[in-house]
Amino acid sequence: MYSLNIVYKQLKDKIYEKLNENKKSSYIAFFDDSELVQLDEKEAIIVTPYFFYKTMLSDVISEINDSFSDLLNQNVSCVIETTDDYRKKYIIDAITKDLSDNLLPEFSFDNFIEGPSNKEAKMAALTCAMRPGEKVFNPLVIYGDSGLGKTHLLHAIGNYIKQNDYDKKILYITSLDFVKEVGTSLRDNTIEEYKNQLNSVDVLLVDDIQFLSGKQKTNEIFFTIYNELFNNRKQVFLTSDRPPIQIKDIEDRLKTRFSQGLSVTISSLEFETAVKILELKLKNHNLDTNGIDCDVISFIAKNFSSDVRNLEGALNRLLFYSINFSKGQKIDLPLALEAFKDKLEYVSYGNKDLSSKVIIKAVADYYSLTEKQLVSRSRTKNITTARHVAMYLCRIHLDHSYEKIGNDFGGRDHTTVISAFDKIEKLLKENEIYRKIISDIEKMFT
Ligand code: ADP
Ligand code: MG
Image 1 (cartoon, helix red, strand yellow):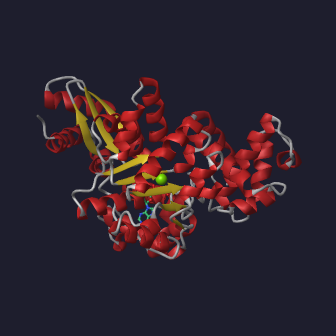
Image 2 (tube, rainbow, N blue to C red; image 1 turned 90 degrees about the vertical axis):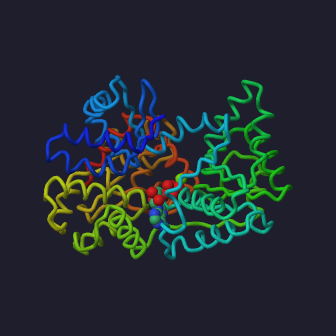
Image 3 (cartoon, rainbow, N blue to C red; image 1 turned 120 degrees about the vertical axis):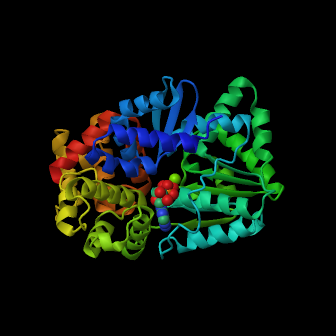
């Protein structure tokens, strides 16, 4: 039996020997923040928190593989995964075999920064974690836009209960895991077993319930599991990107159930909270505010605070840039401006006149449409896609509310905008071509 931590430590030393001094210094952070989670005769898996780190580590995959062979005297092929993908791809199998709780220990209440935008949600989460199963808070639903800390809070709740009550059986799943698992169990005729497994927990945490939308059979099964848990005074925690009542295509009785307990929302970050989060993340990187000018922190907080994921991405880029180009000098505003000069997947800061009109024009030009066509009622596929892309970009770059975007696009309802946003977000995750399209369009207006 290997101890993975020890192997990983030795592996890092080997890899550093193979990298030149310059590369090595920038890679230390990527490797230190990552973890070797699986190793057998043939395959190793290193899990890394950000997609950007995954790209960087994949660049040195041959050095990694060589170091494994040096160390273990056998050929091991290493796979780099982000934490999210790893959970999706590998942990799901484990659930059915042994009901592991899937909780990620790195998310706690202690490292969740509180501000006006999330105070209520954090309070509700903590209160409920202290007294799981009480009827008034069952279920507790936390809803809000993506990247604002819903998943973080859900794990924090689970970890808190786990620490304080060893006997409680806890399970975290995403609703996509659930959908997938129900599908497999129906096919394999093991649905009753799966239901029993879920019904045996004391605390069920289900992330992103909006994905239950449109799946009738799965809804029914969720409904029976939910009722059973609720009647047995078991606690259910849910998150969603919108209020439960606004989730499309799920049964009304399920919406009623979801709305039965307490729903709390997290809103967009305010500047002060963004600054505090940045300071915490700097601390996690073993940096303090002496290494970075405070106007740089303000710059990032102002420009990248539409969600915390953005904020973290921007900070990582800046740190990477500073390690490579300023060789550890204090990070100042000119360096920050340089670092974000052409990183257009991040929010634009250069074009102060950016407006929905500018975005609509850029997208229309890109798709060879007129601006009028773009906001029209036409449902021609090409026009609809362009419209969805433009709505998505308005949300990302201007941080406009769904309502405002609906108005700017010919008086559409905010739910139409939400569904357009979801569609594009999904396409971006799944499809390289869309990522390219979006980044090409962004270049036109940033
Ligand atoms: P959501 O589930 O709402 O899309 P996440 O919980 O995945 O968002 O949050 C995205 C990232 O931002 C995570 O790394 C999370 O730890 C971090 N984060 C979000 N809110 C906070 C906060 N208030 N304090 C510290 N970190 C936060
Ligand atoms: Mg989430």
